[in-house]
Length: 211
Ligand SMILES: [Zn+2]
Image 1 (cartoon, rainbow, N blue to C red):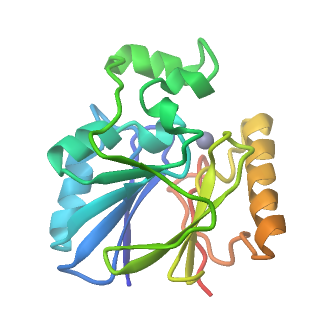
Image 2: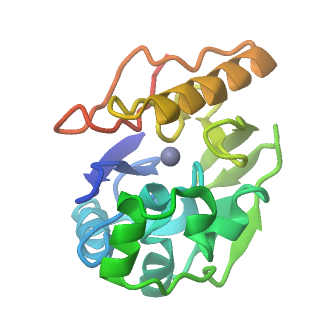
């Protein structure tokens, strides 16, 4: 399995890129905030591995996880997967953010032209589907946002979840914990990470664990 990432310029969220190997189809997870967006960095990374992206997975509808999904899917036409509960955030990101907060300032600075990508598919809880030769299993984990979701890849070989630790914000830390506990209680699976891939700073983590 090939796993690489682009660290977003803002909030340092990880945008994961995964594929069965170089030269294959690929999945992009959580394209976050860049200047003006993350498209260039993602395209460069994709070209580095000679990948063909075919889908975007969104762990939740916060801006730092989906800011670049529209320009990215314009550049590389592909399907976007998100839960029905967070779908509206693609066109109305302020629906889950504090008015006047940092994110709203970013929206003001970058323009607020948000709309849904052309091809959006709503995820189903506990379903399984194959993209790019990988088995994807969404498990809903409401708490951090109403439509937060964790993904198992190839039956737990890999787990993706969105925001997990935000050290400066107790509310985010708590809601992330709720999401994780919810998924754990539902499934009996462990969504604590055994191995962290972390951002250059301790600001934000989007991580995976291998078994
Ligand atoms: Zn978040």
